[in-house]
Length: 393
Image 1 (cartoon, rainbow, N blue to C red):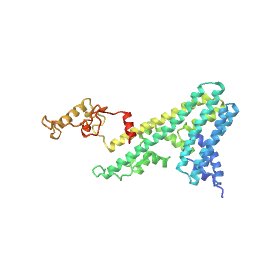
Image 2 (cartoon, rainbow, N blue to C red):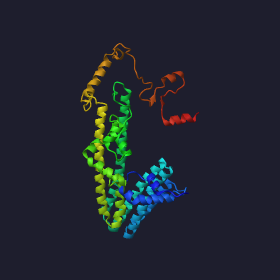
Image 3 (cartoon, rainbow, N blue to C red):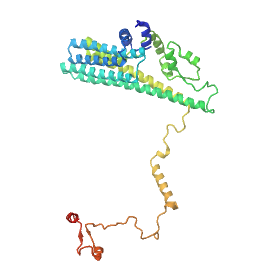
Image 4 (tube, helix red, strand yellow):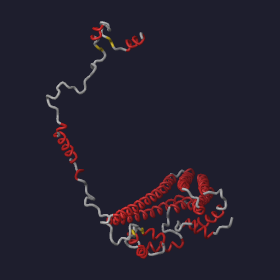
């Protein structure tokens, strides 16, 4: 097999923007490891994912022991596990054999590794000194890791929902001649975030003019208006592939499971990492909130809201439903089809006649005596008589 080009592999497999820990400390090792592993056909992305999990569980074992030497070994194994976790995705992109199940497996194994390592690291320190703060730190690590993933997935889902609604209403306006604007170049909608992703170094206004201002939808206009320096910082950092989100979940894990054990300050490192992660997550939430305001403005321009928006329907006020029910009942009573029965309407009719007497324990057998098929005394319905009658059959 011919030797692979390192630069070509890096260009194909490395992300355009990534965490600074991955760019500086993981990708240089992961791409070279990828070149070696790619030579073997039996090495698959799912196999590398399993290897990353096993190495991560090995790190958890050394974290649980708790002594300084074991902490150093555990930190090293965790870094190796994260390198393998990056290699599986790069291998899938290099060979084109990635699967949907493989992506799910990678996601689930990441959460399992974080859970076991957090419990082992903080549990080992608790067993040494019985300091309950380590137990709280373990809960905080698991909670923050879960929160950032749930928040990221939900924000992504809502962004896709906003884009879908804008595309749908734009298509409906284009298909309705009375609503279509003469200057519209069609129903195709172009989003500014897609233009900036494909042309990261270009100006937003220039991209808007080139794509046609009428069809460009910008869901981050308010954010860029409030923080104009963000675009300049983002453009400057693109040359190094480092994203502006400087402290994400990756840095949080690395500081907790690598930096903390290496310097011997586990609690302080965890607390500082949690604060930094929380601050950056709040920035993302604020950016998303501004994006929802842009979405509302755009939807109001495309489809003005009705006059009843923001008001309560009159029939929901107190007492309205009772009056409506009384009116409906009066209407039924005045209808000839549902009139009340009169005194001369079949006076002997009983809707539910009783075929048997209410006291069924004793039944008068006078009709049977007249026919000569019953004794002179009344027949008692009892279990013993039923058993004797069954025995004579």
